Image: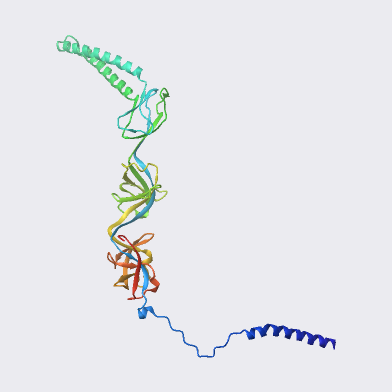
Length: 368
């Protein structure tokens, strides 16, 4: 009996909870609309009705210069460079240059003590003068057969030896003077006045940077390309502009370790902007055009038959099949299918259909 009462009590409590949950929802439910629903008005089809104009961004094509080529990494070297050293031993008596200054070919840079050589030269010149006068007298006697031919020849030999000694002394004196072998900029000096130098001692570095050499290497797969006299465009750190050079020499042998061929191009650095030792991002120009057409890469639409672009003619979209050429990071060369002045769509391409009205928004391109 008690068990039955407990079951009835539990059932009653459950019923009360369910009624408390569903009754408020029943009275607050929305009214049911028994009227026949009105069909939604379909959106206007702008492709058929033509009432809505599609806004697009465009690019105006124009002839421009483009180039393509083989890329490499290189470095800049001076056209002339030398480590100035001494050929003779001696004490430095005078330094005639300042560090970092420009010098001309033949300018005296260093003078080494040559007093002993100068003394020997004076002595030899006196001896030469004496033997020269004696040789003239002996020559007169020889014509009169007053002396033997052997005695005359011996005196002539002694005179010639003195002349040779004088020449040798002058050469040794010249070696005590270090002169600039070419025009250039002289670097840091490594000697001081009064220092004693041995043969081969380093004096300074002389660099001609008025003309620079661009040294770089390319893969052997390009060996069939005629590189001689090709134009080269390169960039260096610190400058955003392009510099142009011309290939003047090609190494006649491949590097067996890297399988590359080395090339050298000459750059006129008369402006003095660049320095030897700088790195260079090099492009050897293999193809260039001064009247090429380019469009942004986003304007290109690939399909099964090839590629095309959307153009705007008389306010409507017209598809134009094109033939593409070289590509850069942002632009694509157009070989055929477009002309200078054409308006090419670069945005909203997914909404376009042939002959649909379009409104050209912001435009870009040279001359805009």
